[in-house]
Amino acid sequence: MFGWLKGRQAQEREFFASLMSAAAEGQARDSINRALDSLNAEILPLDSSIDFSVQASSEFIKILSWSCGISLSKCNDDEAFVQRIFSMVASDYISQKIGAQFESVSAVAILNTFGIENRDELAEIIDKFNEMVLNDSNTINAIGSVIKIWFEQPTNENFSKIQSLFRFCVANVKSQY
Image (cartoon, rainbow, N blue to C red):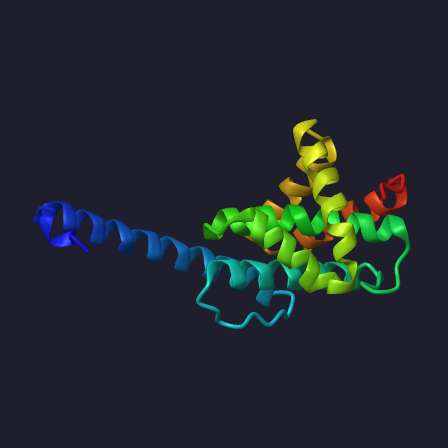
């Protein structure tokens, strides 16, 4: 409302800062789109950084689960837990890269990916994820590392590493909920 009270240099600095921020977000979106394109994922052009991050995270988890032979809707408790933890980690990476609010992205991504009928499990998954993060879980760190590497270098070899870790987690998890 009182923008005219600011000096011209301050207004120009704000303008250039907003341009730089928009350019950085655009580059981050392009990077994520290129990685997901390598998996034949279709990401719609969405204006909201939260909506884009939710869609990207959801598509990533759907493809990862499918590629490991695990259904989103017909899975056991261990598979469901691992899918949701991977979803939280992917949401964390994507939301940080895009500059979207992680809490919103992760919650909506889980509901978007696994269905609103699973909303009762959401708080429990968030609590388990937060507990693992606070305890500096090697599992969370490993998942985060392979996801980051793949998004930065989306090769078949790097995606195979994510698949291997996903399968390892499913085989070794002790049902958490």
